[in-house]
Structure formats: structure tokens, C-alpha cells
Length: 308
Length: 325
Image (cartoon, rainbow over all chains, first blue to last red; front, side, top):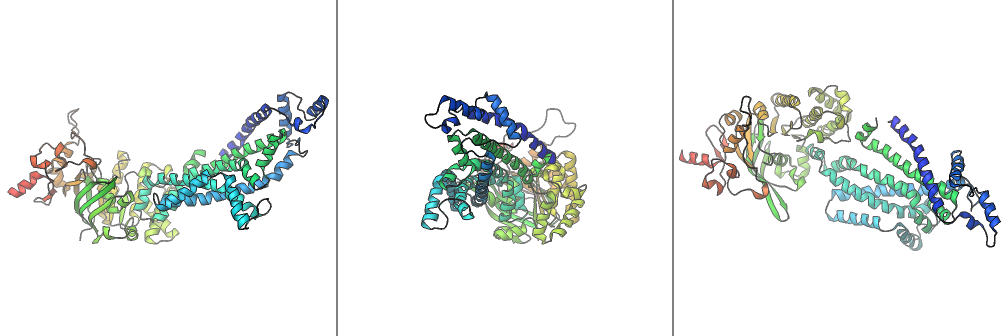
């Protein structure tokens, strides 16, 4: 097991190089550069050249990459061209907000999702099943930003239970986490249901009934437990997505976060910020997948043996 | 009092407003310590009969009629929770495929313990001790180690023994084994059969052994029930039936057993297939494949008649004989 963990960790190094090259090249393919945003109206060609040289943007692209790589490895993610502050500071300021939102919404997705999934699988093709699946379908299809606005209208403006926007306290976190979490819950519910219904036809379930176990024990302890694998996959993917993909929610609720930081930087062609945060997010997705694999081996003894 | 008395058992499925009856009119009795072999081709309703007795048919939407008297109680009148106390405790089931019948994510020991705790109301520690004893009894090598293993780490023979341990651990009065050895190789098969024989003689457990292997039946059974297309066609003492089969189907089945010294390429087979439940023929269901078919065979279904010597058979050949005699 530990050998496997070590091997997977070492594998992160080549992956890092590959994605850093891709991200670096992609950004520079986008027309325009940050100098345009920095230069005021009426500045001369000389001013432009001077600034290009200052940020090293006059060098050939492979050289720029190597400089950037050297700095990145030594822990220096560079300086934001627009904000004039270290990129590392910006990321570490925004990260906790994103993580809090991500983890809470993931928890909502997980618990609400498996709850809906289990009851609809247990009550297949009944009224309860239909209701649960309609809720799940709404969760999947309703866009998070719209749901966010509706939640603000209902719970902040009308009921006054939660603050309209901003960040800082736990109560600021509730509505955005619900808005993001419901989508995931819908997905988890549907996957749980399908995966469980598939399990019901397995031979071992017949023996569980033959053993005289109650239906509830069979469903929760055995069928759900066996149906867990695809659910873990979905949640693992969702974790990576939430870190960078919750931009619309961050904007709706005026929250800081990696997503909105990246978006702003993209509009301004703030290369160092874009590069660092993209690499950060990509690595987060890969590490998320890695963690998923580790959880797999705890959830399924067959997977555990493969890694031995 | 008989251990098990099944009368006019039938199972009905309804789909798309059409009703099919894959098994009907099945009646037999079993005494304590008796081994009953149930034979028939694939699709003859052997497994369904077993599931019906276990009360497992409602799971797949089957409606059971007739009566299943176990220890004097008609199981069909029990509520779901009462039936849970019978299943796995008084009647145990050994499923068709031991390879896939254990939950893959729990240790096999815990899967034995689960049933023991539920039915014998033991605490975890006592249940574990009992489970280890059972495993030892079933000659599982190194029980302590196997207890901690997961199903995929065990061989087919070991998994089968675990499944049997789950079945016999609660001291049931009746054990229903549905083709318990088909997934195993021949040497393991023999071991398992010997084990069954011991269980029935030593503990007095009634064993209903479902198989399409007549060799297995000959080895261990006291009585034999031959099913064809969802009907019981012949029932009787094992020696009697093997020596003098009555029903043309039983005869044909026995003729299909190859023996050493037979001519190459002369392997016998019964022409045609077992009809499916959606198109059972009117009258005797074996009539289309029967060499001795008479006009009335295709008109109405022959009743079961009891012959001298206790054998029972459902065939017009014998109805006439008894009427005439």
C-alpha cells in the first residue's frame, strides 16, 4: 500500500512538468499581453519595450518558461503584474475561502445525495422514488448561480436568516455551499440509485435474504456499501471541479476565492497569476483523483489487493 | 409429523398483464434427516421451488400459492418479520454459485458471525468463537487466518465451505442446497458431498439437494423428485426410481448418463428443449418429446398417481394401469 502511495506521489512530478508546459503555452497563445493593461494612454513604444524587459516578456518563450520554472521550484510564484503583490500571497489569501466552500458543499452533496439515492433505490418505482429523483434532477439541471440568487431572495432578503453576500463567518458560507452542494447532491443521488439497483441483482444479496437479515440491514450495510465506488468517483471529480468551477457562486455571493481570482487575472492577462493558479487547480484535480484512489482501496478490499 | 410438507405449490408471475406459472402442482414431503434430490433440466423450476420454500420469490415479484408446511406451520401464512426468523435459522439455503454469493466487501468470518448473532442472539466474541469452531468442523485449514480474509482471497472450495458454515451455523432443521457443487471441480465436489452426508446423518438435518447431476443424487439421496417444465413428474425412493424409472422422462434422463465402455459417439440426449413458462403445451408438458405419447396426453394433464411401493408418477400410462388393475 505504502509503495503504491509513494509511486503515485512520484508520478506527480512528471505530471507537473507536462501540465506546466501546456498551461504556459496556452496562455501565451491568447492574443494581447498584460503590458497593454498597464500602459496608460499616450505612452510611447519605448515605455512598452522597457516594461516588457522589466517583466522578462521580451525573451523567447522557452526561456521565459525556464525562468518561470526555476522560480516556481524555489517557491517563488512571481509577482502579479497588475496587483503588484506576490502571487503566492494572493493564492494563500483566497485558498481558505475556496476550501471552506468546497468542503462544505461536498459534504452537502454527499449526505443529501446518498440519502436521496438510498431511499429511492429502496422504494424503486414508487411515489417516494419519483419525488426523490425529481429533486435530484432539479439539483443537476438548475444552474448554481441561479439557485444562489433564489436562495438569497428567499433566505436573506425575505427571511433574513443569512447575510446577502460577503464572507467571514459560517453564516456567510451556508447559502453558497447549499447552492453548489445541491448540484452535486443530485448527481450523487442518481449515481447511488443506479449503482444500488444494479447490486440488488447480485447473487450475494439473495444469500443475505436467505440468512434472514432484515431488508434495512441488507440495503444499508450491504447493498449501499457495495454501491459506493461510483459515488466516490463522482465526489472525487466534483472536488476538483468545485475548487475552480465555483466562480459563478463566488461572484453571486461576492466571495473571494481561487475561481474569481483566476477569472479577473485572465481578463487582465496577468500571466503569473493565471499560470500559478491554473497549475494549482490542475494539481488539485490530480491530487483529488489520487485521494479518490486511496479511498477506493479502503472501500473495496479487492482494490486494496491490487495495490499490494 | 413430517419436517416439510409441500402441497400444490405454484408460483405465478405477472408482467404486462400476462400471467405465467413457471411451477405448479408440486407436492412432496420430507422427513427429518432425509435427503431429497430434486432433479430436472435447466428451466424445470428446481431453483424456483427452493426460493418459494425460502420465501424469496416475493423479492422478484412471484406470487406463491398452495401450502408449505414446515414443522406443522404453513410458511405462507407467516408475516415478513416472522419469516425472517425462519429463514437462515430453521431453514438454511446454500445458493447456486458460491463464487459470487458472499458480500465482497466484508471479511468472510464476519459474514458467518452476522447470521449467528442475528438468530442465536450471541455477543460478538461468542459468535466469533462459534464461527471458528464451525470452520474447523468444516475442515477449513487455518480458520483464524481465513476468518480475516475477504471472499476474493479464497478458493472456490473454501468459499463454498464458508457458505455452508453460514447455512449450518444456526442449527437449522432443513437445509436447501441449490446446485451446491456445480461451480467446483470434481475432487472438491466429492468432499462437499461427503460433508453433506455427514451433516444429515450426524445432526439429523433434512437436506433438499437440487442438482442436475444424477451421479450426485445416486451418492447421497434417500428420495428423488423429478421436475419437468415446472411440474413434479415422478417422486419416490432413490433405489426404486433408479432401478425402475416409471415416467418416460425419468427413463430418458437415466439413459443419458454415460458409462465407461459405451460406444464412442453414442451419448444419448433427449431431443428438443424444455418448454418455457410462456408456452407450456396443453396436457402433459413432456408429450412433445415423449416416445410413448398417446392422444390424450396432449389433451389434458395427467394426475399424480401413487403406485404400489410408494412411488408417485404423473403419466397416463400408469393412470390406465391403475384404473385397469
